[in-house]
Length: 461
Image (cartoon, rainbow, N blue to C red):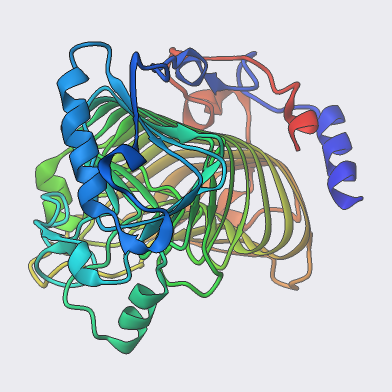
């Protein structure tokens, strides 16, 4: 009943904006038309795979994809995974490939760490995220690819991550845990209509990629599973994440771009990131930026989000030593239910790859707009903490109504910005009222972002 009431409220709320374009969306999300049909198709069973959940099928996957590579210049090919439980170690994808999981098809990650090879650390991180040195390769992996699709009839990829979570808790890891899906240096990626379960570490990790669409995907890991982020675009551009349900032990979506000096030197930002129609719950944040954001993050658009039974809804994480920037972030149409903190900015997050970071490399956090938010059973409205000597500026809050239980709903330091129609009233550094002369501060978005409206939001929820 509460959700239906909130949807009704959204339909009548007057939207506040500095320009006539009050609702923003990305033409990129509407224009993606990657090739799902392939003229050549084989089944994994043709290469000796056995779907009994016990037989290791790594060689079958590798041999099938090696064979399909001969069709890359002939319209591409599809690898069909039929119903069954297909145990495998890490395997590589190729360009112009569709990996198709039929209904009741389950790709199972091996519980033997030797089936997940160790690869070099990412250059923008300088080392494994958890330990110095290399990192285990993801279950489904690809690099330098073009036109790659992971889809199907709602099949499942299950990382069987509990063995990795236990190693993390027991401090017996030799290398950083693997992702469930990682694509590097790739262009034209579509992931849709698949369920991802129990990732050892971050679940879906497009890194150094362009033109990525993740649509109608379900990501689930237990609430207590460590660092099982849902979708982490990392030093990537033109990314569209839409119509997804995520429930994990860490951030639902976390936008990243490298770690301290390694990310600064690598210098590849994440930009043009579009997230819409997302539902989820987590012990961490619903939508996060950072903390690894040293290459920069900009032009982020988030709309039509429902976060429930979670710690934090919207979060930016950074630290002295990160450098980089987070700017031009626009979040609108957010529903919250039973959330501890609605908005949280953390300027002293810490966590550095080594002792060589430059403490004077300060991040720039500016032009962050959050509007049209409504929430019930929210403990605190905002915990917005910048960095002394490095104030976060042009933080703009508009049309936010939260039913807050804390007697101190806001705690703000080293931030500066504006607000309008915010209840409970915003903290003093943000309570200057938004007026037309603040348009360039609060409402800036690049020209390629167009107004498309959100008429389908209520029906979608």
